[in-house]
Length: 200
Image (cartoon, rainbow, N blue to C red; front, top):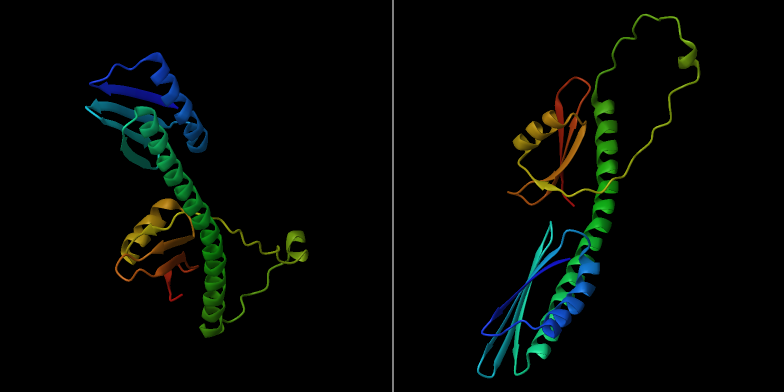
C-alpha cells in the first residue's frame, strides 16, 4: 500500500512514520493491490488528531479520531477503518451470493417464458425433409445452463435493448430504476426482444 503521511504543527519522526506504516500495512493486506492511504496528523494544544483516508479502485474509506495522545488517535482511527473495510467485504460477499441466487432465478424465468412462448405459437407446417447428416443422428446436444454472477445495472428497458445490441449477447439482466424490479431482456429467434419483468 502506498502511504502519504502529512504532519500539521508536528514533525513526522521516523518512529511516528513507522507506527503509522505498521498499522496501515494490516489494512493493506485486507484491501489488496492498488490501495493508497492518505494520513494527516495534527497537534493543537492537547488535541491530537489523526485523519486517514483509504482509496481503492472501487471504494473510499475515511475516519478520524481525536485523543490526548497521537499514538492512541492513530490506533483508534485504524481500528475504525478496519471495521469499515471488513463490513464492506462482508457486504460484497453477500452480494455475490445473492447474485448467484438471482442468476438461478433468471435462468428459471427465461426457461419458463421460452416454454410458454413455444406453447402459444401456432404449429408450423413441417419443412420438406432433408437427408440427415451424421451429426444429426446423434440427437440434440445437451443443454448447459451457466450461472454467472455480475453486478446488475440500473437501466430502463429501452436502454437495456441498446446495451444488449452493443454487447453481442443473447440475454441481459438489469434493474429498472423506476420500479426497482429485476428485468430480463433476451433476443428471440425472429430478431425481436423478449422482456421479462420479474416480480420477486
